[in-house]
Image 1 (cartoon, rainbow, N blue to C red):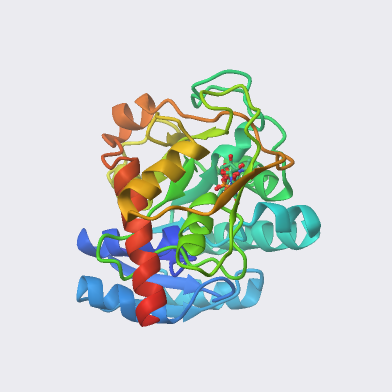
Image 2: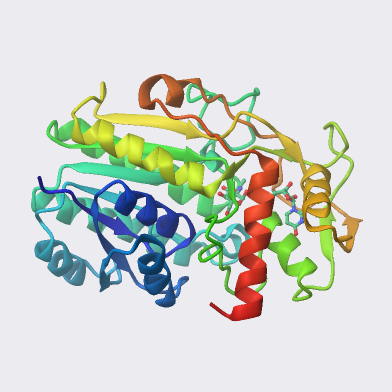
Length: 343
Ligand code: UD1
């Protein structure tokens, strides 16, 4: 049976972990990546972990012609999992056109060519950002979609609308959009993990880089929110759990089990942790005292975000299994391996 899957952005943070899960579930993976925010070294790391080869095509999905050429080479694929996108929230605020251009051209060209070449299954990497500042908690898939607080988030909302329109008119095309909450952690081998270029925006890499001495001090953005300890609460989810959800979604598409042309699922744990709780978990696991200070709020942060996870459990048979300590432990292992061995 043909089990070839095209993974765009397959060398990125979530893409690389999903590629490993795919290989371990006997899929053959073709990675499309432009290396704009990833390293070619990740190919060797994935191959060491899995003992299998992946096919790698360096392609900029903004380029319609090139994208078509690459898809033509792999038109026997069963599905596309589309991760390729820029994802830095504050960068997107500073350079919105770049974000709209990159993220939207990439999905438009991907949908166009895969459909034209007969690849009729699509999984999209979406975000809880599409809920904007949520009106009620926990956030279910039926929560109102609102204008996201950043151009980055808006590219995810617009992409979902594009997919919706596309599936409406093409009844032989099936899509699943997965709305991630806050993915953190790394593969338990310690061989791959998050590798932000430059200064990290997100909490977990900032914590691990501060502890390893790359950053001087973590700034905690506000402790005057209406939450359990005053710091914002998020639904952190282990990247390996997240990767496994993609296998479940893919299987549902391949087996034709979907009930609607576009299905949407939240991917979170359903548990909210505050910034201070994440720091405490890190200190407990690493045995280190983290250098941090409380500063003013960061613009665009909402007090609290956490998911309902019932739908993913009911329809995909998926549930997050790993807790906060496991997320933090794996992120710290990755950071230490990476710094000490430059792997
Ligand atoms: C953001 C995006 C989300 C995206 C995710 C990963 C929005 C609304 N959210 O989530 O869509 O998927 O990044 O790219 O667009 N914090 C600090 N100090 C730091 C960094 C973070 O205190 O140096 C705090 C923040 O205030 C926040 C929490 O840590 O309360 C988590 O922040 P972060 O990791 O950046 O994720 P989000 O902003 O929740």
